[in-house]
Image (cartoon, rainbow, N blue to C red; front, side, top):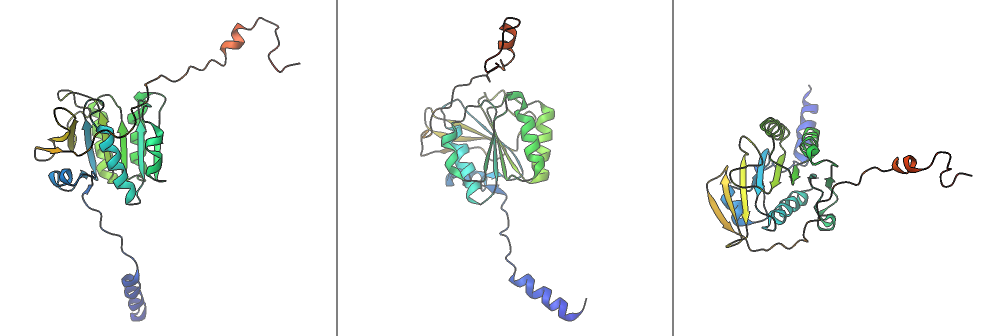
Length: 231
């Protein structure tokens, strides 16, 4: 390549905007918790967020989602139980996608597809039952390969982890006797008090999808009776 072309390329390289280097973690929105975790939750791994209902798991998850969206990155939420109140998430940003599978058993499959796309910086898998080891290993591998944070939110005890084989990071939110987040695994043990109570609306009731009864009326209609609208 000639010298003028080399000089032109060097000049263009200097003028071109350079993207800010990606850090190793996404902020949780709580400075003290970020300090305990060394920056936040890993950008290329699994974080398990557990606790009893109304402890503040969803509030913390929403803070993490807001931090990622504030960086102009895409976030996908898989609402396995179809219980997240949409009005509490709608105002976070236009780069947020919510998936509500008809069958909770398909939630892990949805997360698999979203991770494989490589589009999302954060995939939130909410309300899932404990995942089989094979699913956990596959999702962890995809998260590392795509450099995507996978946040798995569940309500389980310490003896029944959501992610088999051990997640990259495990956080426990508890409201009693004090409101705090405890680091159970993946970082030095710590307990960080949180300055908030659950500020979002209660979750929606868990209701199964309505059955498809379009064929029931035809089965009950006497033979030879015309349907509505037929002349």
